[in-house]
Length: 155
Image 1 (tube, rainbow, N blue to C red):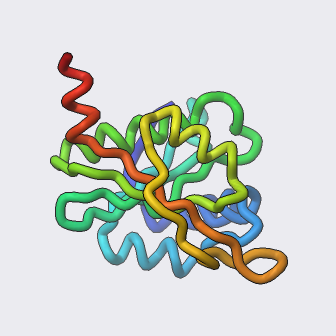
Image 2: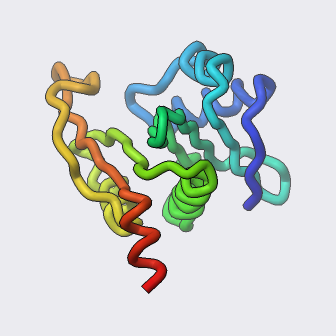
């Protein structure tokens, strides 16, 4: 699996994956806004150059905010989510971020387990953050302290 910068020409495929993978998907305008704002956005492609996943990160002072991470449903449960997350951690370290933060649906236990296994911790809960079938759903705010991660990795 290789990564490359997300391009405007990728958006039709990215939006299609987003719609397949999420009950309340981002719109094309959401992705266009991220590219226009110059957030870091990558696609992850297979040998055939087909997009299998993507991620978008916003740098805010000394933090990296993971805005979106997604794996095409047909490519899930094969370790690609972990590879994408590792890419984000490596990128965040390369820009001297001290913390990576993200929100995840409280019902998305599989994603939460991925983040926990990578060293993320629950920081708080954002009430009624996401749209849901029945009203709104809470978000779990999670963070990875990169200074602490670096400290432990040196021992």
